[in-house]
Length: 170
Length: 178
Image (tube, rainbow over the protein chains, first blue to last red):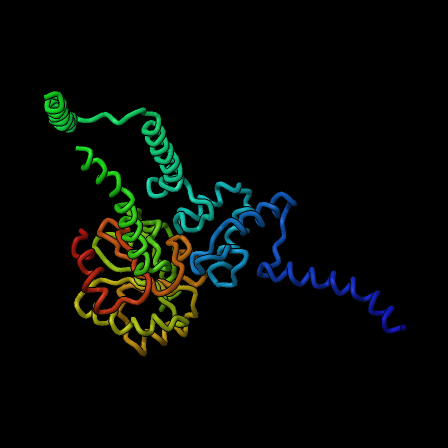
């Protein structure tokens, strides 16, 4: 009995501890001190937004690579100097290219990402429009050659009919 | 008339399919770890760094002007650099001007490396904190930059230089530079 009650007391604490473990495992542990909470928030936002050039698909907060550590330090330094988000991102892009950004800017190379879907939608509407137009047409028009051929066939038939009629009269 | 239009309309999806195939196929053989340098067409960033042998001696970005050259980023902690070193010696033997940048390393170890393995560099910079490395956008050693006589970066090769990639890719670009 006593053991169970102890367990009941301890389990919430245990769960709470687990929470701490998982949150700290998310980012590499560094100790940085900031002048204000805004700066701290900015630093955390930036280290999640910047991509580590060495490790393909981790942000610099996630990665334990030496380079990610250097970039974290540099980001801290720049934030501490009072640089804003855009300035820090520009600083990194000037050195490592747009690869360090997780949201790509609109450039001639990436314009298709924005225009591509739009293009497909427009193409779809064009196709739809064509289909509807086709259905609404009561009868398909014949082009000149087809019309002539039809006339010829019909003409022959009517001539034959008449001959038949005449023959039956006789 | 009606037939050709039909053929054209029907072939559009086929053409799109082939275009997509082309890009996917190309993607199979491209290495996502190779990034183009953001500094291509720009001059080497400003810096002040010590000579690896002599802490008293300092260099700045003016050493990259006057002739075309290679800037090789290396470190003793980098096994690929070890594999590359022999080939760099060969290039130096052919009269190619190479500046070495020892990146985030230990000075005595680096000097021992250069003494034991032969030194292919005309000038050896010691970038202990990786400051110039960061400004150059170095993300892994070894990296080799092609710099023209005006000090403008024209190309970056990531990974070891060897006979094959030198002959096929880097040398033609190097010859093209002024």
